[in-house]
Length: 269
Image (cartoon, rainbow, N blue to C red):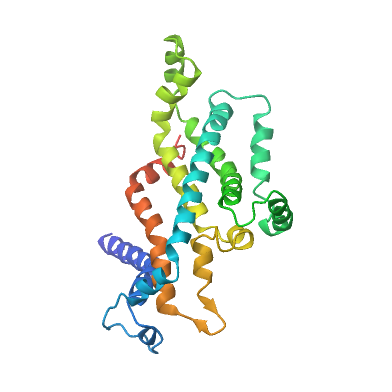
């Protein structure tokens, strides 16, 4: 039994290292010179340098970072504002045709985004939203809303009905019932939903690369600029990727307790 536990622990550590290794390698490469990054076999011992990070900022990283931050925050807030009432209506106060509504939300995720890019491009051009962050806000909100509704509906279903009935007996109206009674209970689930929306919005590439250019480009679009006809700049690309990943990793680390608790809500009856 002891040997089995030790073997399981060792296997778990091995799997964890395999998952984390690309991130560790990216961090190490970001502190190398281009010459050190191209050595074969790879050089593990080198003199760290910050010149790659300086080069990333010199190439205009900050505007792309600001665009990604703005689009991510605004679209995530819009998703929560729309998804919370919808999830409440589909769980605690079911409306007529709830299953049809849920099926419709799910069906919107089945259309490949490649099939929709041409009409979206034409519409954005006609309403003068090409290369505009508000076009991405609208698209990212629509992209994340179905997932948010499905997730938060499962969280709302976990709210004890006795608590809601007691609040109604005490005279609580719908706004107070929602914001004073229900939301505090499902706060971890809302945090988990928000974090997933943040990740999806921050890393989205296809819409951004096709609908933006110089003014509204996001971080993933900026990273694609390192792929040139002359080859890849591995060290500088690693530095840019590290800077692009840091905000999401920091947010995930801060909210990890809420994320685990939120994702586990509704899993056990």
